[in-house]
Image (cartoon, rainbow, N blue to C red; front, side, top):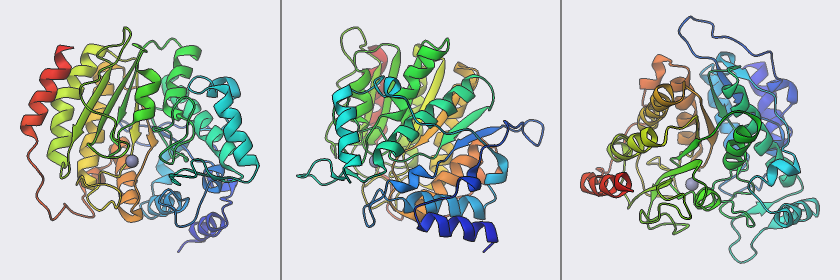
Length: 381
Ligand SMILES: [Zn+2]
């Protein structure tokens, strides 16, 4: 183990990942002509929101960081400055009384947000960590928009896609992707943003926050019926935003062929019709076949191919402007390999073709007819 790795591991174990380990550098250009500069945000506060033995633990970022070190990813990236979102920015997605509730619970020492469900926890650092996640995601997306980097990936926690305007749920506190999308619209000349959510759970918070907003398209591929039980294909938006909610639900055993095919047959044509100025991807890796919290069976190379499709959409539709933010993934080894695979794909490294953990031993279910029906449904609205 290198000295630097040991240093990071030691600090991470203490919940105090040293700022020097990820201190921002000046915006870089690719080392090799034709390569991409890939921005990244990671802040020590993301590790301080933690509850040992909970699935959404700070150890997820420690495992990702260790695999990035092992595969020498860090030296290929351009760190972008982190910062906390302002209260005004949090209100791009949330009500002030909910923001106040999170602050009071967190600063009071934390606990479970919902004592009955006991899924979403807070500790003393949660309010600041969630503000840091949202603000850093804004910074990264602005850096992509402004061409300071070509593409980006925010390694943030806590995640956001289940967070509603006035409620935390599903390990999520503030909806960082919606906040970043609205920041792009308010701070730059961005009109339309598409959010592609391939986390295995339905992004119910993202959907709810933009269901009546025709300027933000919410696309989600997920297991269904499954927690949080929302995300049927029928609902496509409301109040003038019909057609901008694009749910692609599949029962268990959906794998690479399903995810890639629904992208080609439903998501890509929806994006072409919407004409986004910018794409944000909520990159959850809990659809991996070894994940303990769901029953889909995507592999590392399947995620890499899916990420490549997202990049191609951005290249053809919005001058390459695309940024990723970390979603779920609760088996640490596949989570780390999937995340590093996404970085290899963003960097256009040859390693994006590798499949370190192999394919699911269970055959994938055939959802080709379901995809045809989804195409008929979504492409007529
Ligand atoms: Zn999930």
